[in-house]
Length: 89
Image 1 (tube, rainbow, N blue to C red):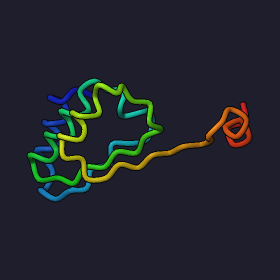
Image 2: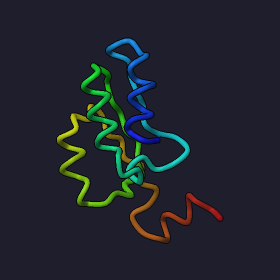
Image 3: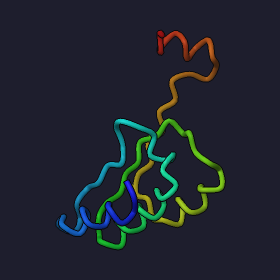
């Protein structure tokens, strides 16, 4: 989703709406994620991201500055062996 597409949707929501950028993909793979978060905050929404932490480290300062309200990290294992116990095939 582009920041422009997000804006069109978010403008139709009441201020204070909780927006969860999660499910069906890693949100931080979207190069415009920081713009999407900042736009949601500008419109008065509460912004949350659930992530597996697959993130370009250059985006981290932009995400921090975007005003993100909640960041939830999912970590399935500290090692390959542990990960494979939980993520079979």
